[in-house]
Image (tube, rainbow, N blue to C red):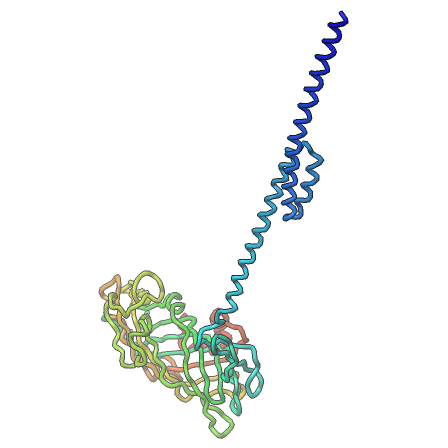
Amino acid sequence: MKKFLIFVFILSFSLFSVSCGDSDDNGDTGDTGDTGDTGDTGDTGDTGDTGDTGNTGNTGDTGNTGDTGNTGNTGNTGDTGNTGNTGNTGNAEAECEEGETRLGDTVCGSDDTGLLYKECVEGEWVDSERCTCDPGDYPNVCGHYAQKMWFTANSKVATIDMAEAWTRTYLHLVQEQQEDQVTVHAKICNITIDNSMAWSLRLNMPQSFADALPLLEKPSWLVDNGDGTFGFEQDVFWEIRSIDPNCYGDDPANYTLPEIPTDPCVEDWDNDGVPGIKVVATGLMSGTVHIVQKSSSAFRNGWFADDGETAGGDIVWTDVQEVVQTDNNMLSGGAANSMKEKSSHFEGNANFFEQVKIPEGSDCFYVVQNAKTLFSSDPKKID
């Protein structure tokens, strides 16, 4: 019996020893928690030091989440932000292209109301000698203006003699001045046409027509009349509409308009998918025509008030149109217009312009919305 008890005691002690040894081996797996030390690599992420708390876990598996600390290394991908330094390569690039110009912020002019233009020199912007406003001994006519141009014509469309036609054009102007020399930057805002036979046929310029027209640069000049008054002149200025400028170059006066839509010079300025600019005819022969146009205008007997607020004068003009496409063959001949010096329907100038100063920053919307208060009444009601 004693031998049996001794055997049982020895057997139990052996089992206890084996059991304790297995738990020590599990502790070794806890050593894998030391892989939490790999979390120290998380020290590169600084937050990885919190991985040391994983040592508390000889639950260690959570320590393995310390490996996520390694994702802190992905934080180093923030260094890829240094690729932003490639932006510094921009410092090696030119700020501008040789020959470019733009408006600067350096004040200039005889009355300090102008700004110097900047020009591109060896890749950098530098002040030029060109000032937007330097009136000298002339009236200051710089800045924003509204302008109305009125044209009276003998007009014929297709087989209908329209007798007398009237065109009113509103423009927004920005003027620059170098003493007597004035550069007018003009944008046509709106065109309205009417005639004395409108019941039979009337041509209508949709707003898309005016919107399609580019900004115009018109050289003009002041004239000192020697008596305290000043003239305002503008030489013949040509407009060739819906035609590639390369086709007429520096000689628009002698350019002959094409007559077919497939001519390579014809362009679709109003972006309606049809070459030419759209005009709508109403009346006995309604339809849509797409035209190209060549016109000229010049100021005569012009004047500018000595305070620079208002201007006016006469206009001489020409106009030629070609229909390149239409949905009514009876309109394919287009309109034949010639200047009429005297109207049969009203007194006074039949072809003239009016101009008035408007607030800085104004635009076409301002001009059209305020036209009735800015300008005198039309000599013939056409709205």
